[in-house]
Image (cartoon, rainbow, N blue to C red; front, side):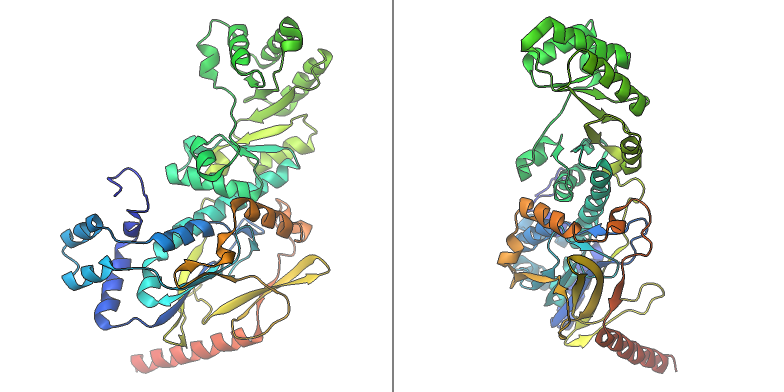
Length: 457
């Protein structure tokens, strides 16, 4: 169990809102266990032109391993809310449903199902919290990282964000999502171990300060790690660069420092001056790496200014999605017991019934998406695939992290260029409902409104 320290497989069943469990007991007592359909989607993109779907592998692992341990059941019993018969039911609980989803790394847009769960209603209800938690966050950080990678225009981007991110799980899952979005490496050692990511790092100012001089620090660190990156802005940035030049002269052919790092000040001006000092010393191979409160906008400005920076370490603003720290995601019932369902709440109505999303192309460029009923045949490429059947992954649900990254690269290349700009796309990418889906929604709405009026009367 977690003991308050970490959410692992043993404790994941309790990673849910209390009302999911109270509803599950109500379904159990009322005998409501017929097949339900739930959709997970994002209502509005807000400050994004496109989202990059992410988090599916985490969700599928959770569904495959979902169990209530004896310790979890003891805790639920202590709440005084749940009967012994229900707790016995939970002791044997397994997810046995089907999941349809867009593959990780797929570009997606507002109102399109990122995944669709088809399962007995209690099973589909219980998992809502975890699915929203993981898909929302990982899709959000992948989409933010995509903007950073695009702004860098081919230059290296490294994840430096874990120390200021909102919790250990967020930092771990973000590193995974960043990889799908095109980030080249991470400073997160646990993520490197867990996901096989390339780990990298430089040094902190404290290391420099702990020595009597920058020269001593540079000499010691480069002696231990010959291909290292030296941090030059602890005291005076350009003087730090000059000390690197002196170290190169001192070491001669033994000098193997790979890069210098700028972490403060006017990065454009300092990078130009540093490049000039390095080049005048014949150190053309020494690269310049920049960090310090960077995001996609700052990087875009540096690139546009022609700053001779070879790579960027991006931390807080990417890790916390500072300009848009959440997605307006939802997980809504779309059908139960063979009948389409929807809510009519203002600005929160959802699309009823099972669905499929089709992407239409002009040549090899995506031009619009159509959300259709699952039953109809429609032109275009279907995006939702069966990734889990009967509680077990299908082959489509076993894509590796690198496969997801390659899929993202391919599918992003097929989008109109305006969608990958930091500016608001004009026009936005068109997403429409098929006539059959519109008619289904109108029919369900009329039925529900008639029932509501009848009740009110």
